[in-house]
Structures are given as structure tokens and as C-alpha cells.
Image (cartoon, rainbow, N blue to C red; front, side):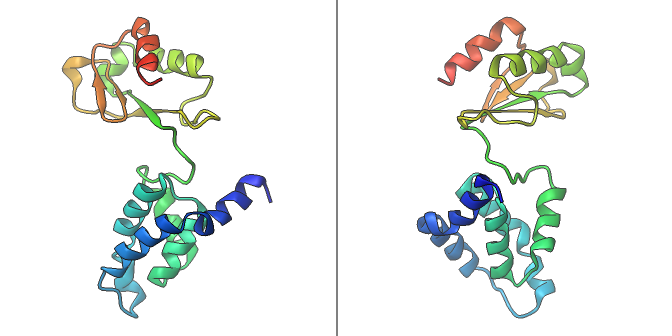
Length: 172
């Protein structure tokens, strides 16, 4: 078992305040003994847990499953199916580059390469210090500003490779 796996198992014990938030949320749900009915609350419970922890490590997935009376495999099936959910920690600054058609035509591929080179990570990865995550997105609906980069909730339009260092510097 890796150090990361051991650390993940300790998260439930390490962060009782976060667990209390999850318990309070789930405690408000009209859960019953019917597993199929409880399954209907899985996605919203996972959304809440990811908001609280920042991601959904296996121990949190197991905890949610136990609270809803579901097997870990059922929970993991949902987490692995929906791209919104992540089972790995994300950086404080989530850099998302639109790779939809308009953005791609206007150089989004080059932006992904340059951000990757500058941050020292590949698309879909997070820096070791948990400062930056890099991802591509399909159309964000801002085609007139192509190519578009989102850093958390901030939108940058008409991004050029020369702007990358400025965007990263704003995060520091």
C-alpha cells in the first residue's frame, strides 16, 4: 500500500469537521431502507463531499456509500463515469483550456502545450505542491473570445502564448 493510500484512509479521522459537514448534509436527506431510493441521493451527496474535501478519495467514497447503504463499487461507478468528479486532489488553481472547435482552430492546442511546459505537468495532472491543475474542456460557450482559458472562475479570452506567464503570475 502506498503512502498516498494510507494518507487517504486517514482523511476521515484527520478531518472530523469535514466529516461533520457531510454527515449534516446526508442527515437532511430523506433516506430509508430502500437502497434503490437512496441511490437517488448519491450524485448530490458526492457533489457535496467533493465541495467539502476538494476531491473524492476512496475513503470518502466508501464513507458516502456506507451512509447511503450502497456498495463502494456503485459509488465508484458514478465517480468514474462523470467527468465532474475527481478521485485525485486538484490544485488551488484549476487551469482549464477550451479545446472546442473555435478555440482549437485559434491555437488552443499550442496553449495546452505551453501551459504544460511552464507548469511541468501534462494535461489532467496536478503539480506536486497542489498549486496548479491543468485540463482541457470542450466548448465553454465563449467562442467569440477564442481561444479561452479559465482559471477557477475567471475567464481569459483571446489568449496568446505570450499571455501564459502573466496568467500564471496572477495566481501566485
